[in-house]
Image 1: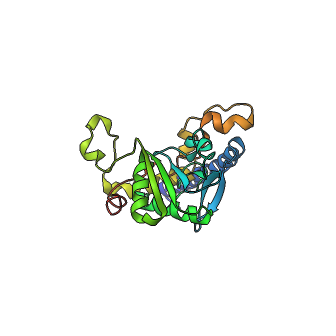
Image 2 (image 1 turned 120 degrees about the vertical axis):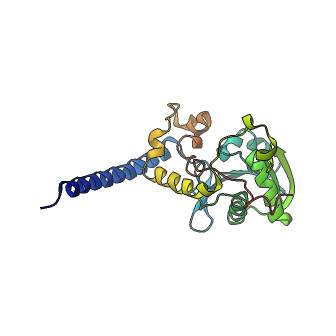
Image 3 (image 1 turned 180 degrees about the vertical axis):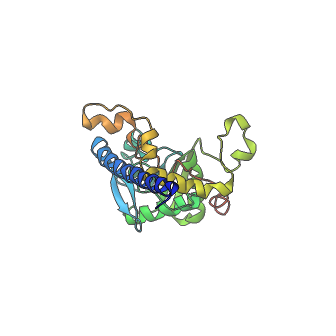
Length: 248
């Protein structure tokens, strides 16, 4: 006869498997609901096995490319981008794991994000040169992009941009808490797993939306609600893997 411990272990394992499967289904249904609640603005462009979302309007050169701060979707620029589009081509985009873009591989350094953007603009048919407009983390990324692809960049506008020396020079009360570097990758893996089984969705407050679907995205700055948290839970890093080699 099987021991009581063996039976209990089997039941617990089966129960855990059932919870995981239910969580995966819960997340998939939730993502489908999100797509109906928050219709995509922009278009998905394949950059090599995964897609990033980009929205452009206007004509002219150089194109102006808007890069948001950490945790912000590209849609954060939706009030500014149309005004610039009256003068030239203007685009905002969602970084990997944000807004309507697929998550990206670890590590999410400024160099990795700049490479993604370079690939996105090329495949979306937005030719250089560019004026890069970056807020917070986006400002640091603009500097890194300029270091990696200097011939692409006509100029930069840094809007309250982040700086690589912030952890060393800023007062401690202004800095967020961060894990030791050796835990970054395990945390990233844990965050991805939590997303896939619906745990992040379950623990994230669900904002109310306007009844008129045409106003939903604009009124709630939508992609931040459930679509924007996959990579940022683990944290976008502007550590020395990304900025030190390229930021001027």
